[in-house]
Image 1 (spheres, rainbow, N blue to C red):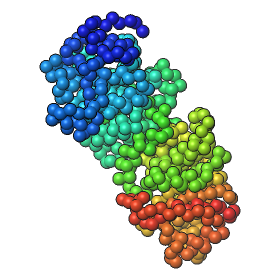
Image 2: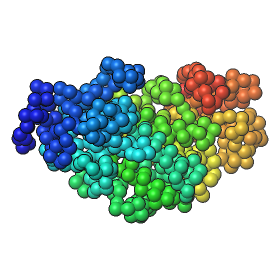
Image 3: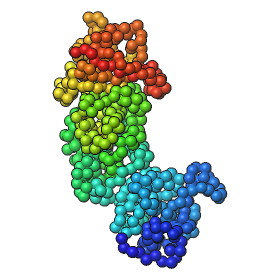
Amino acid sequence: MAIIMIPQEIAENLKDTREQQTVVGPLVVYLMRIGWRRDQIVFGRSEWRVPKSPSEATRREKGQSFNGFPVDIAIFDDPSTVGDPRHLLFIVECKPETETAGVSQLEWYFGSEPHVQLGIWANNPTASASAIFLYREADGRLVLKRRKINDLPRPDVAIRLVSERLTFGDLITPTDIILKKMMEDLLDKIAISDSNVTRREDQLDQVCNLLLLKLESDKEGKSDPSAPVFFRPMESAARTATGIRARYRNFVDLYPEVFVTEQDKTLRFSDGTLASCVEQLSGLKLIDLGVSTISLAFQVLRSEALKQGEGQYFTPQAVIEAGVRLMEIEFQDLILDPACGTGGFLVEAMLEMQRTHPTMPLDELSRWAQTHVFGIDKDAIGVKLTKAIMQIAGDGSAHCVRGDSIRTHNWSRDFPHLAHANFKDNRFTVITTNPPFGKNLRIAAQDSRLATLELAKKGTNTYSDLEIGLLFLERAYHWLKKGGRLGIILPETYFFSPNYSFVFDWIKTRFRPLIVVNIPMEAFQGFCRAKTNFYIFEKIGQ
């Protein structure tokens, strides 16, 4: 690091700390060198303070003393407006923290200073040194970028994003809060601006496609960190859209079990929407997100997905965690969720393996998931969300596929990948699932007959229409090895009502009950009013 001479007018205002002397002071010198006036920069002993809470912000507005966090450098739009938070242009934090902690600090400041356009985290004043830039766009979006110190804004030049040739090394791991906010902003903008895709379900499907493509770009970039990633903005919206569509056409061939229909195989957003999505997501490193952030980071997409259906594929996280722990999953288990929804049980199975084997390297966890974790769901959005989340959790996404777990007679025609040995009967040692259930969700007698699902006979010789949740019970029986465990959420009435006595009779020779866990009705409030339990069975029949 080159030694920077600090003029007296700056030095006398610096605190007597290493950070102030070696980073803050030199950065103020650099800011003045590129045109900012000393009297519009607040730093050092007179540093700007950001209110610690909304109530403290109110005190500041009233001109009263308030508690605040100190900002290393604050730049105002003019010397005459220094001290007025409405004229605060950008801030610079120089704390010697981790990158993630630095981003979190900027994120907090943005919440308390609504007029700030840019936050910068830097701990090296050299012009070529890397820094994190958090932009607030005109529409309120927050966009993270990795820049250099020589990219610090200059006076009389708009603070704005510019395109660049991103490499994997340039990507930034976002906090869960920033990622959640970006997802919300992205979905809101798509809903307002895109005329090509207007149905919310289709919009979510397209966003899932882009997330999977972004993850593929991260994976490819990680293998060669110095090469440009392909998921990045180009010179124009049209050029960006053309490049992304071309990459997507190649990408869908890698996962034919996910991109089944012609509609799945096309990015249908307008050029402008695609470019906006790429701009917002391109600078983020998603592939290395910590597994503990997964649920919150994808909460937005999960919540939106729930609004599109009857809620049958929603399982509260607390129920998932408790259920998986009760299953006592071991390293050698082969795990299947035949109604995986957005992958809650499968992700938790990976997390449980990580918890019970804390010294297991991440690459070994990934290999374990690739060979031990399987999922099926009929809903395209659910499968794509599952694959995205599983990739982030540890790349255990290869065997999460789209399909119909019940109508096996249609597999050869509609879902030939389910006829693969991966999904053969008597293969799995653990099945854990929350299947769709309800009196209005029934499988026709004809389909049960063709799929040879005996439970639909209800103890007679004639097939009848039957609730789909009960038929998942039978499919699980066929998929499990003898001695395998089934963990399943079902309505209590199936096992305690005289109307369903045929279920108890069918189970007696096939399953041994191990555990019954009561699930409070409040757990599914807003989605299901049925009284449910989490049942764990051991397969005893052949």
